[in-house]
Length: 328
Image (cartoon, rainbow, N blue to C red; front, side, top):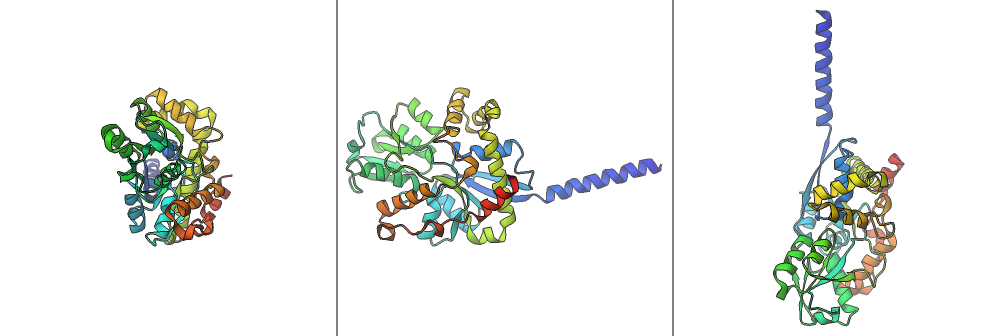
């Protein structure tokens, strides 16, 4: 009898412990652009690396950067993962106090055009499609066109949304969508659709800090522990994704999450793990690349009188440093 009672008590204690552990999970809403840049998040979810430090993330794909920026500023989402120039735009254009807290990658961005276009100079009088007209990859496209003799006004700009929408515009509305910046895995689909690859969008600017995590400054201060735990799991996910020992499992994960054939998933994996152009080790922030990101905005948008401010205005890597100190 006592033995039965003792087992019952232990079972109840175990159940309570499980319930407490579940209730201790910190929910975080994370908004992202669909694509290969989410590989680290996929990996961390796949290996339960967010759950280990008590983080429960809800992942949402954004249709465009406006939704991402507005949602973050309004508190609909706690973390955004995307082109960090969006954080700069939040600070400068919307006066929203966002900060960049990690690096990520260079965006793997390439310029695609309709097959009849032989050079970027041929886009004079044509229409190009962008996510939003004044941030991130749109600025990359304007810079490439400027370097080929085309200034704003020499072509029309059509905002359509994230990469999925840009690719759709180019394949379904060819007369009105002659060029766009596209990244993996959509680059593979663009080639299959017969679009012409004109090369890297960053060809003339060199290093470029594209994707990273950014949050509202006040939220980060009030939830520093949750943010550090999120970054820790994110970095652990990246380490798993980059480990050659996990190659086959990682390719299968990309095929599942990005809806790719095994062949295209292998190509995506090769892009992400390229030792030079792939994902930054441990999601380290590329300061020189970010300086170029700011220079691009200054040159193309004429912001700050053409001279960008100090990068420190937009970043706070103290949360990243705390995360790294705990997982080394």
